[in-house]
Image (cartoon, rainbow, N blue to C red):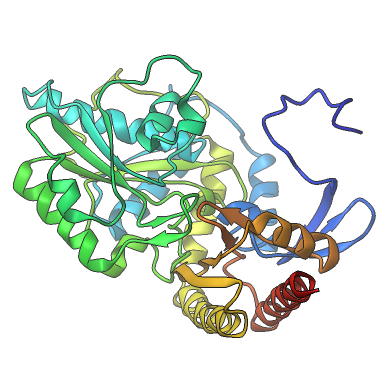
Length: 398
């Protein structure tokens, strides 16, 4: 079907391929062509396509119970919340259907905290330039990207953007109405940029000294993607609220926001809710994914192949200095910052080499492969990128 015939709202611009089947790190289109998937639904398919343990989990649960609503307790919610709180800073969890919903709940929780403490004037949420927190109206205001905000009417009050990675600039924006800061430990859309451990520690001290909360958006960087369960754990700091999604569902739509008991003190009966969030199907998958992520060998493998990928990307930078500026990101959320628009490179990798990658801001080619990608598959991806970059240089010199 041509774009002119499609009845899909034209807010996306997908290529012509239509994928119909996947297995592990590989995906097939309707013509039968096979592709190496190094973007995994943008860090969603944590264990690749149709992993047998999740197919089994989903099939078994689908034969039992799909939905009851949150009028009733859901056993899977209680089980997964117990695991999340056991292993993190958090005391309470609210399950959602997506990362955007998790962010929305996190923002509400932060403001409600100050209201419960007798300071309803503390509404300012400081985000960072280059950030992306989802597409709801509060989320796009928190991100501040004009491309996502303009044309939708007045901007919401209480959302401020700070320069990325500049603690001194951030300090100047903090005041008596500051409620929270919201930050991705590794920015995805903004160029796959990892915040330094020192910067995250500095944020924690600023929050503690000034009485505001920290929200970490781990929607893309969490669920084992950086080699720890959550990316902020590398810095040895904890947020007050955390939003998660993408990889926590292994390809099934689910998310959550987690909070300390203190930060969540304003979230009482009736102030927030969801119809589908935390449904039995999603919770069966969420528990199975978290159990798999929690096995020591899972993160051992992530760190092993992440080290291989990082070294290989650095080698590409050395081999193609006229095209590659830097290797960015952390773990298996990596970027190759180019001197040119990465979209043509992305297209050539897809159409000529049958390798799927993403792009991000600041001219970055983005890689977020399945966590269980093999070393041989990493080599195949690197060889393909190397060949396309070499061809690009040859073409430019012709």
